[in-house]
Image (cartoon, rainbow, N blue to C red; front, side, top):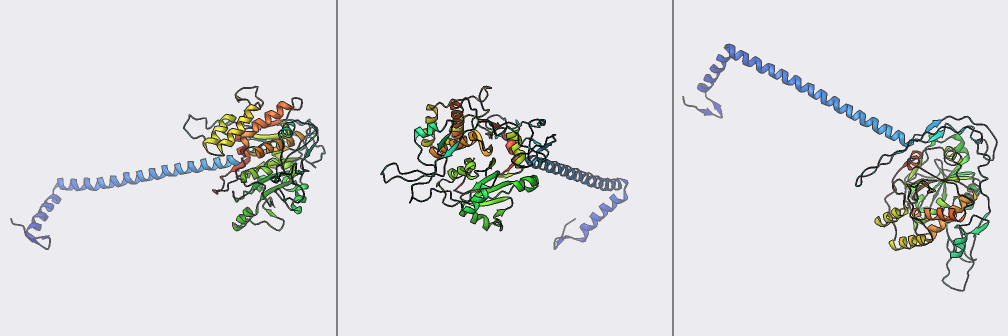
Length: 484
């Protein structure tokens, strides 16, 4: 039979044959069974498909829930500190009602050392916080009776320098012009007058820098316990201490001081962080510093970092934290745990990765942290003056690490602590501003030259430091202030 098409449709003759074929299938048992199997197959396929979609959706939901719980507990650990009750005996002292009796029972510590990150070479290490055994609260806290009676001697500071010659090139410096003989004698723990920043020039010369107005000075002179930080050169955002984790006692009795320059204050104000009528942004008392003493913002940041005993001359204790951190712990509980309980004058954490000064020198060069020639000059001088190549694994070494993570420091303003702070600042002023390079030399030389007057320095774990604060990154600006 011939086929004919009209507008793409089959003619009547062809359609009739096709209809007859399908009609015959429909009337037969074989055709009926084929159609039923087709319908059943369709129903079964749809049922299985819907079931697989349901199972896949449930699996994705479970995975998202587990990920959310992981992130929640990880965030919780960053600000968590354990609470350990302790029975204390109340005794009066100069700090008011905060006391720790000599006969008080020592609470059990709950420290979990994190070994996470000890991976093979080539893999990035991860570092996490660990729990710190703080007291439950500051109620009934008492300063130990004999705590401040360790080693006493008198320190005075060079206030100004006169022109030693008619040389017209004489220029006053914030750190002064310390001779090598003066530097060597300053390491003895004895009654002395030494260079420790804030050195003025002869009459008629301009200020050497770090100028603070009289109103702010009066506020700082009243502080008995100080927590301080700084931002210079708009290098960071403002990190406010977590108010809910700080006791009312500390809010009323501890000074929280943030040092800023005009550039940083202007930047923060444009972002909505303006001081209130009392000069505060949150808990921070804003103190504006005029006439910065160094062009290097990193070196300028060492002034409040190391010289808190000069800025807060009547303070008994101080805590320094870098501006990349937010304080998540009570200052008085920090002082009790790291100083009073350890019978320490000075507490600082070890570096999270490096423990040998040789490694730190190489890392600074590898990352171009400072001029290589200046680093070599400093390190060669230290080696010639007795800096040993220490092995932190040896039990006889006085410290577990000779490279600190200097972004968090707790100190009592004792004579030895103040002397060490001055000596460390003088090394940063004399050589490079990389304070990790000068820490071990300064500590070991002070210890070597005063065997009868040991300096009680406690080096705690980096994971404990991470439990006290929330870490952030610095602003990405060319004038970065890295005070660590």
